[in-house]
Image (cartoon, rainbow, N blue to C red; front, top):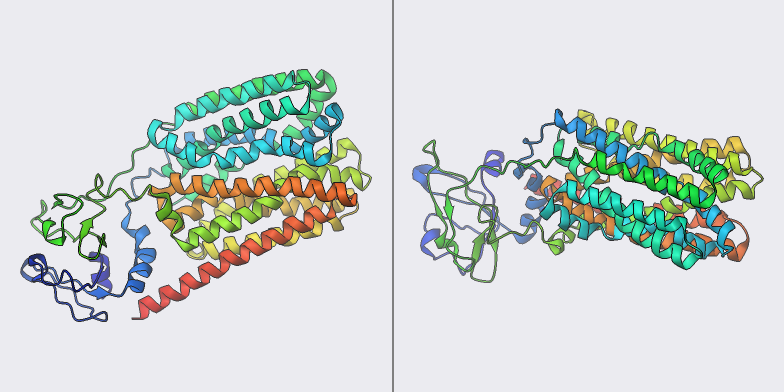
Length: 515
């Protein structure tokens, strides 16, 4: 049965086509029939129930796609370097949102909740616009998107330098900067996943580690101290423009398609009898194509008739995968805590008596630990004996992030806060860096661009919820503890949802393999 499963893709039995000419060689013996033969060129397919068909697609969809075309090195390492440098600049600025939040409060004298919107909105828009960016890079490739994004980010920082009120800053720093960040971020993650297969976790971990970004909080504090509000943003605008250079190494990589079956589909309404299997160059018969139900009496060929059946980019189809949907929910809940932490850890440090300069060190330590976690956890999850448990270990990491977030308000000294934030950064880095890897594990590399865009959209929703709610809780109760409790609880809840979905998938897979 195992050899049959590798060679053929199964279809559900239906009485409306069993008498068609193309089905003369197919024996239907009910939903439990398990037969497969190619004797004398006859194709005998086993029939399965609708539920088995869904499980089969989940189990074998990733194996069907051809991912061996990824070079796993060579120019790919230069792509990793370019992505790393972009992440250093992009997240160096973004993770310094707590510092920028303080500067905006000092300049415009607005409430914590209002200022939090401006400081964290670029991250939200970077994620919310990711599906649109995915469509753009599918059409125009990676380099043009990164160059355009770098220019927009630089312009946004220039305009922010001369903003006179929070409303203008909202338009320049938040909206323009968020769109620019999206055009830079999404291509720099997706292209690394395209260039690597066997070492994808490690490569993505290195590329997204943003080592060096931990220096940005101290650097930004220095720029504000010595050059003032205007001078600091002018300097940051020049730094952001360097992302154009690093994005120029994003050479397009065309993935090899699976071997083409010699199958002719006359049109999308033809029945199964219109799909004719021909011999390949070796003289043998090509495997039958995946046949999908199009209506009660018509079937059409996907996989090879791509012009007629291009469902890979169908966003509804991607969200139809319950594991991916649960993953989106988990990331949404996680991002509530993620961006709240970077925005409010410096303010919490000041609240417990740590001075401004030492509070920047706390953020720097958190960012450094984040980078270590991205590489370290990515490398561990790429180990051959561990890779098969990668998704479940990822769920465990999400749970631990939530637990640590809840413990942050328990830290009352600089040393305690530094230790807790270091652990928080390591776990958080692993969660963020392996998002695209988990997407590939669930859906396959061909759907990475569109699926990553959808996932980022859900993450953006969490960004819009977390910091403003934490700021509101701060304004209402006078401290930041409830914001950390809220974010940590949300993260744990999302992690449990993702874990349950994966347990269901494992049980269904075991049941399918045992029948």
